Length: 476
Image 1 (tube, rainbow, N blue to C red):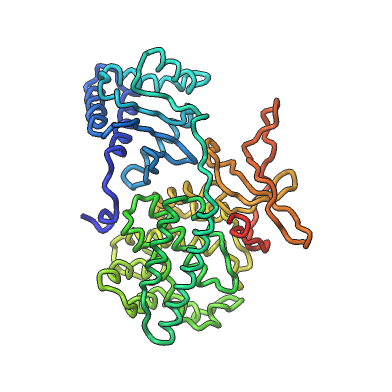
Image 2 (cartoon, rainbow, N blue to C red):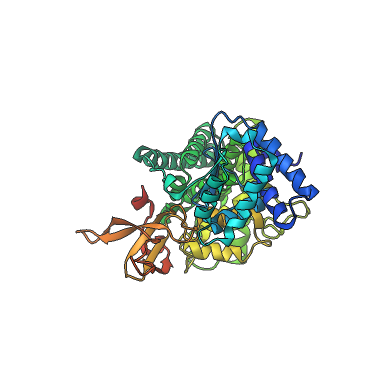
């Protein structure tokens, strides 16, 4: 088993069924019903469904650019990323919101299942594919499947208590990280138990609501950059790791790596960290020592040898690019570890969207994604970066948008069926003190009645931090 594989969850029967359904669709697109390969796929699909405990319905839904099977997010795993992307396109082009298989599907004949999949494929030829498909399924008297209509899907409203818990967890993680750094600087050692508990709480928040958790990464602190940056990297890494299908234990280790990846900067003179101008060659050499210094500091932690062995490598690697350039310079030809590749993506994203004393320009979140995507396959793992871009959306949560109406607002989330391009935003209004306050929540997918034109369009994106706006203050 490779180091990457050991972090991944085993595929569930529901996930296996999803993949087999994809293969069935692809097969009948190019082969006739009597083809042997079609019969093999049919049999596999039937057998896979029969192994699932169907005391109730088996539901596959699309919500906010993600598949949910039995209410659980279908995780992006390296082996099935292309399957998920292809199925998202297949469903969206047909206007399908989901499928619901009933227990009676076990009794469906191979011929009925084949007919149903043929109807799925053929529906694209119709003017209103989803409606046509629902009518055909009803007419064929298939009591074992239902086409899920849009009206059945409702976005979950996040309880205010979860928002408050997420924010509290963020700042507790920030405090625990500072304590570790300060104790190491003064005493030469520190415990990691509190930081580990904070990461476990972060995982809990993320599992409950990823959009809320992602919103935490919009917190920017100009004067406390090193620490907020580390917590933001942990937040983003946990979300990306979850999308990649990591187990809970691996997520906890990844989160600790994110928190501690820049711990070595305690050894870099502060005047270099805060220097407003270009760094000299000597100063850059000092900066480039910090990944190895992070490893040395982690070794000083009061933690088990097993935990240290899990969290040492990624902080060392987080500035090594996918093509093995970057720093520290390495002479091995082995690929960067999975954790290292995740940290590199999340570290760069947060860094280039954060204002710094030495950086005259800072990118908006969507500009940052575009910048990074231009470097896929060289700087970044192409599959992980694609998953990251999908996770963040065209305009990531917290993005500051200026509309063609002159209004400005912050991205809150992406409603169902938005295609990941037209988010909901909270408008910003001036208060009586000359500051800003949250205004109306508007959907950029809203159209003007009778015209089909969008009521509001994005004129441009801005960097919230550069405009003196802390998005988290309006999102939580």
